[in-house]
Picture 1 (cartoon, helix red, strand yellow):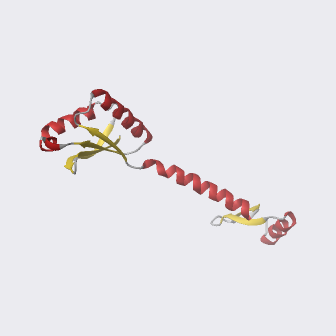
Picture 2 (cartoon, rainbow, N blue to C red):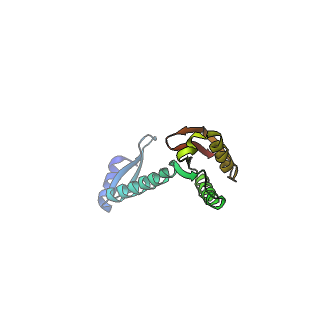
Picture 3 (cartoon, rainbow, N blue to C red):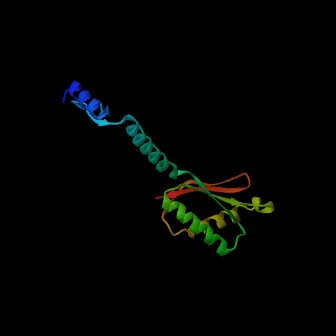
Length: 140
């Protein structure tokens, strides 16, 4: 349809002519109210933004002296986060003299990692820093 015919038809219906795909030959247009078109585009952009937020880094803190049941609760949280696709930073807090017994702390952290039923990969190796040990894991 020619541009003049499309504009004439839009005037009769009381709507606007909006170019949807300008790169096509011939360009694709719609007869729709501009306000309605803008509203639809804003809804699509908002939906895209909400979909992008899900991949943030999650943190889980554990203690080296935590009971087995407490660690199982943390494992369930970690499993839920991994299934949602989040990378996870596991922070093992060490207090007082625990900070200087690194081999013991590493064994405790490895025991916690073995409790995780979901397949995962270690993104960054366990390292000591601040108030304990940090390790990052993500889903395979």
